[in-house]
Image 1 (tube, rainbow, N blue to C red):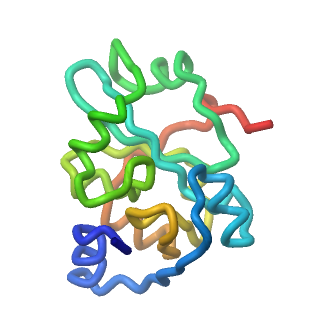
Image 2 (cartoon, one colour):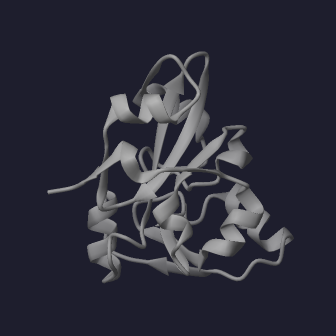
Length: 159
């Protein structure tokens, strides 16, 4: 497995330039930043939640940790909890567990992006495995995914 097929096909069909990179295995977004020798502020971490009766994707810099209660207040849902591993395996069958790309639109999930990522020229994210990443312009990502921007108040910087 390398780049998730849905993502690779979508990028190629839309003629979006990107760079595919392989690196040592990285199981967290911060490890990915270290493996790629880049700032955690440029790494887009994908987190999936069960919100009321649906799943939603939240994308934030690797340097952030989610404050669940603040996030729930930011989003238009009454209940919010992390998706289970079983849910993730079912939703992202073409990706390794925990390495899902931030293209929720391809998986019928609404996508919410922290506004600090929107200020970045480029973002880097898991491409479906713990050893493959994609680097692309944030503006291209935004045109393809149409995420809703949310305020960084829901997240806290990591230790």
